[in-house]
Amino acid sequence: MGKTKHSLTAELTAAIRAWHFLYGERPLILEDPIAIDLLNPELRKRCLEGDRQNGFGHGGSAAIVLGRARYTEDKLIEAVQSGTNQYVVLGAGGDSFALRRPDLMEKIRVYEIDQPGTQEWKRECLEGRGHALPVSLEFIPADLEHETVLAVLARSSFRKNQRVFFSWLGTLMYLTPDAIFGTLRSFAKALAPGSEIAFDYRVQTEFIDPDEVEFVLKGDEATAAMGEPKNSFFNPHTFPDEIRATGFEMIENLSPQQLAQRYLKNRKDMEKPTTHHWFAQIRLRS
Image 1 (cartoon, rainbow, N blue to C red):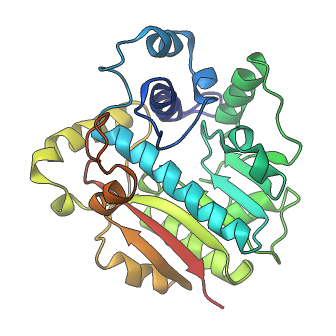
Image 2 (image 1 turned 45 degrees about the vertical axis):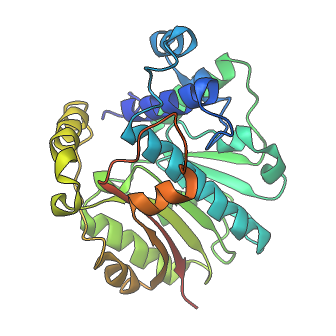
């Protein structure tokens, strides 16, 4: 993805959240009234005028997008209640937390890290629809292929000596394992003990439901064609040990089935989550 272009997958995930807000079964998994304003005119029209029963918000991928966002927000709330007041969104894309949750924005400072093109697109969408950006939100443009997260945060008001909660959603699979573990090791050396990260990760093919493998691989081909190839795949049973070796502790390691049990139980408005993503919360040891 070039520096002057925004992430297309970011816009597609926003479409899922928008569709769910408009047509999802109540109570919603995640309430996102902002997402509709992040869509291009064609996607916006499809959401506003579309068939309620046949849109973005019904498939197994939609269950992942909505479930992981809700999971992360729940874990963030727990962290804020225990005293964390910094929130970093890595690869923020079309994340709308800072506008959706003014109640929490009174207690924390949010740092969104993403490529300059995606942040420019996001600003234009939000400001063009009349949204004022919160004063406690900082956009930090970055090229994480050539600089570290800590170097990026050093250009902001971020304080390393205070606990922080990271959201790292929809991103790890696009990075190499070396980049992922290198980032975690650098965090372990620099951040305050008790800092946490919530993320989803892609599992190896043998851990995917055989009936879904063809669908998943076609999705991989599609994102690669958009300039966003997948680069990391993990064994969910050995991944906690790999995490522990970086200095973090795996607090939760949820399978898609466990995520569905927590957030999607008895819902009739969407399919079960596809099995190629797991969901985790990790904490920096003292």
